[in-house]
Length: 388
Image 1 (cartoon, rainbow, N blue to C red):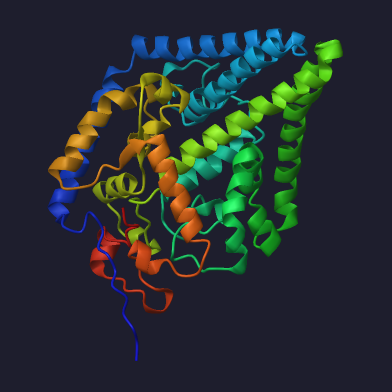
Image 2 (image 1 turned 135 degrees about the vertical axis):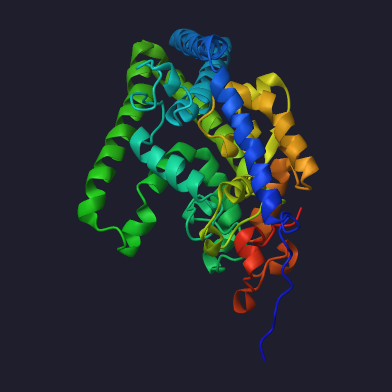
């Protein structure tokens, strides 16, 4: 006798096909309005961020020449930490998305920018820009769901190794840039044999070369320039990298994994329309609320919903279109998952801890592995919802 689990319907299950496409048309109109209005103020913004980031890095590294003195170590490390966060979040991430390609500036272009990160830009664009943003939260297609090392949806088969995933998550946050680099090399596919070594070897060598370049810069060159302050300078660089890693890990996890986000069956992609794609992005993402400074330090990924709807629009525009997106959600009866960072991060941790243990289906309203129910409605817009 088969047992049928109670599957919680999607937050979009009440929408008709006509409503879904009308919603899509409204979002298309928002995009077209922003594209048509891109111009000088946007260019001034990105140039101002670049100047601020470089000033912080130059000033921080200058102060760290005297890192042996505690006030210099603290001030220099703080400046360098902020500079690294800005470079990765607001500059690297967004420039590599092509958000500023319309300026036709070869110095600020997705094809020429190389970020201060262990991961080669080319590999990151393949896994993030294409795989993640195309197949957002589709189980079996979006490898960003748990980054292949953690169970963050109850549909994932539980393994004894999942018991340590809270500790795995802490470790990942400390070395996040290296974790992303290993992830983008597809080390899981190399281990399983799915990706042959002949194909993987060039990518592994390129990644190791990039890691070596970054390590030489932060842990050899600049410490050597400080002479007798070598050790203090090295520890300052290490601290700045850890601060950047922990911060970016928190922001990214809060944008994708807190309670209230949905994951989807692969069947959801069959015949998916533009309106349905928009809804998948909205229901699979979450925002952070806060000040303008906080939004800047997140690379405006605090507006993760807007970023997933329009990943190639200038990041400084997300704040102005967010109220319009929120109004669309209200009028169409869809959730707009947003909250302060501590609240959203606590939700992420609750999920990681709960799903370290077997089960979880009853907590998150998902079908059990032995009795998964897939309907026409779920293919259109009603995957299992991770309950808020």
